[in-house]
Image (tube, rainbow, N blue to C red):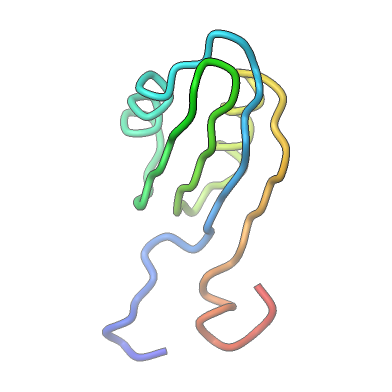
Length: 88
């Protein structure tokens, strides 16, 4: 990894939220106001939302998402390790 390839947010956090009355705009707005990170994707409908987010505090993301419904297909990858050619 070169100096130019600095990773500001270490963890690529992805998951699905299953619930009732979900709103992707509300979820996106909450992320933007409460979490430090980038590359946010929050897409879905009232019953299922897919989250993709780069952050240094994935446990906060998981805690919030779990408050909205059931979370599953959870993947948290360490992008610093990946950039160094190690298992993520």
